[in-house]
Image 1 (cartoon, one colour):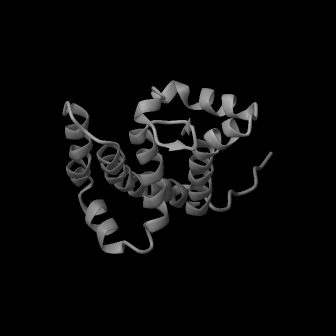
Image 2 (cartoon, helix red, strand yellow):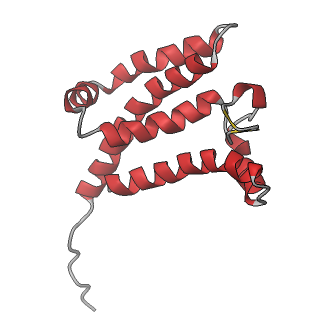
Length: 149
């Protein structure tokens, strides 16, 4: 279950990074990747990390959300005390979301502040999603009895 989420997240991050690499090689798939992420990100080039001459498929902050969520899932086994602290009182996530909100509201921020605060916000969200998916799978019946006609 967690492995599937990690693979999906890694594929998403890979797609973000693949877009400028494909654009540099003149590949048509680059346009599809940029278009895929367009509904969820403004994709302003000046607010995006670049590989070579081409921007990533999402901005600094969106890339931080994708990377942070992925790192949160991967880091779960290593960060058990932090995971337990968050799951004990899920409202604590608001403390970790606050820096992103403040960074967004400030008239001055940097690429690293946008990226870093998004990573800080997304990693604990991954913990909550991981816990929710785990609960769903635990409540699913393992072996359904055969139906009687």
